[in-house]
Image (cartoon, rainbow, N blue to C red; front, side, top):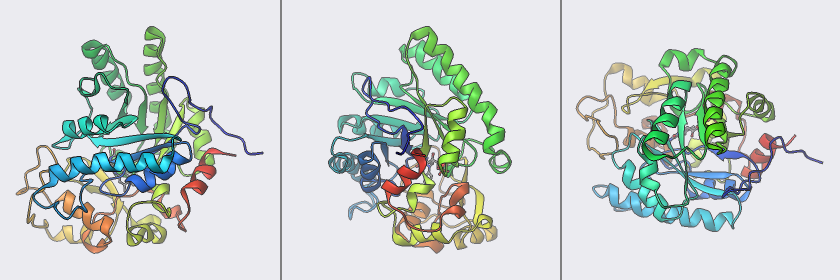
Length: 356
Ligand SMILES: Cc1cc2nc3c(=O)[nH]c(=O)nc-3n(C[C@H](O)[C@H](O)[C@H](O)COP(=O)(O)O)c2cc1C
């Protein structure tokens, strides 16, 4: 008989038979197919809203409208696939120029939860006011946790419904300096995780509200999930492992880059978003040694981005990658990517992570 590590979360608007979040992955890596499959297994499937409408024939020059349309259609499709199981969430980057519009569109389309990373979502409670959507920040330090808890309570009398802690081994944009992202390990980051758990516990006690915490970054197998649990968290978030699945929305070429990746291929890079990121070393990254890639057109994706000064266009690089144009694409990945040896099913990944 298989045994679940964590308790189910199915009270107060939660509907998780496994306390597992599949991390949002932009551009286009976690859309309805992957998120729906994860929700169907009883987890939280997360759609990334970053340039979500990238494959709409009208996208060029019409990005904002296509993105808003795609947020609604992917949430609807994810729910159809999930058939009432699990939860359907969106990941919205705070750094996006249309962050607020994306949150509002997701609430309108009935997302069960809104998870915000790449910046602190200081005004998120105001955006979801009156809706049943659960809200969560992604944070990487006790300081950030304390700031969000204090400021949401003071300004909105609201606490996060849950918190995602993203550690230094995660994929995509990182809430660490490049040095810390390289040097910190799950073990050395453990103390920070315990402090975040302690910080939110003070609010839980004072306001009598449970705030579940999910740990992300390098969650590979059951052993990692057990380690996370030992730090006092309530669940985990995993992303890299879900890329090499049949259901993942990325191209076959993107998935095979994961299958073929070796440990030495993983690099910390600079992103135009203003944060370091973790990605697979490839031609695009190597070419950057010889100078910037000229930005031919601007997709108006990131706040405060100046196309004349950035090393490359992040939208262009991520869209190229997800479509399978790998030489000209940025292939975001977690530190554990080299452990992937085959394409699995979402069902198998969920079983492997959550049950002993
Ligand atoms: C391909 C890829 C794209 C990602 N894109 C986003 C994103 O758009 N927004 C975000 O908050 N996190 C993003 N992440 C981070 C994941 O959601 C997740 O928290 C992290 O990768 C967890 O670590 P793991 O990949 O080792 O499981 C991305 C990760 C990957 C691998």
